[in-house]
Image (cartoon, rainbow, N blue to C red):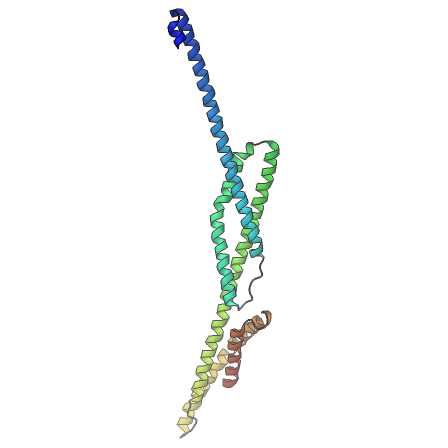
Length: 248
């Protein structure tokens, strides 16, 4: 600019024009560089996000491989089933959270990495396909496990409730029989007491099919479970059998 100010008007005008052109070109170059740098930084950030989420998902699925192939607790083992069912519910919550990460990985792959070098693109494509395949398998295994455990817990609670209900019923019948006055004062008294005994017998006989089914189901649980693991159920079934023998 000092040179321009000292130059003749024609020379100064030419120099100013050249300077303006140079400044414009410099602005264009620096703008392009800034844009490319911003694009590069965004790409680096996306790649880092892609890798972090990929690694996190793979690590989580590796952990799930162990849990999802853990044998289910035996039917009747309510504390064991409850504990594993609670963990399974936690896995379902994790899946809902990580679903966003899966979508992000696929979105980054489709929007950015798909335009990468062909060798890198092929490698990443295989990684994403493998991730998606493993994810679908984990979803299927986790869902199946959760449903199994829910059903096992329902069946286990049902058998305990049924045995306890039968024991209460049989105990009431036994107490009723024990407190009966068996003396007969006249024919009418005989008819009344006979009718009551018949009614009690009818109640007991009506429960026989249910008791046999419950006993069969409970004994199967006891047989399939590790020896000595269902002591509470075994105690309830033994009491039910003894009460049945007493009143039948």
